[in-house]
Length: 173
Image (tube, rainbow, N blue to C red; front, side, top):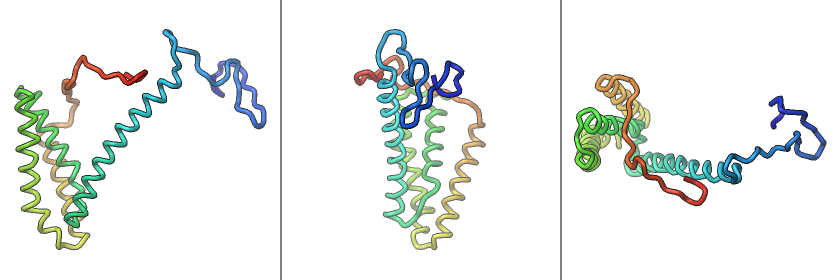
C-alpha cells in the first residue's frame, strides 16, 4: 500500500521509511517468486536494449558527421522509408521474406545511400553549416512527405520474426 492508495493508514516516523499495514513490499504473485527482483531484471534488460538502440542511432549520426562534416537529420527518415518498403513488399505484396530482406538490406538501401551521397551529401561537405542543416532537414521533410503520400498514415502490422519462440535468461523470459 502506498500513501494515498486508501489501503490503510500510513505511519510516518522521522528518519524511517513510511510503513503501511503490510509495509511497502507488494504481496507475492500467484505461483510465488519475488516480483520486485523479476521486474528489476526485466526492466534492466529492456533498458539495455533501448539504450543499445539509441547508441547505434547516435553512432550512425556521429560517424556521418565525423567523416563528412555533415550532420544528416534525414538519417532516420531513410530507415523509415526502407522499413515501409519492406512492409510493402513482404506484407502487402506477399513477397517471400528471404527475398525481401536481402533485397532491401543489400541492394535497395545501399543504392539509395549511394545515390544520396553522390547527388546531395558530397556537395554539402564544403558548404557552410546552415546550408547543410537546411538541406538535410529538407531531405527529412521530403522523405516523410513521400512516405505519407505512398503509404497513408494508418495502423499496420508485421508478423513477428520468431513467432512462438522465446529466449529465457534466468527469471526473465
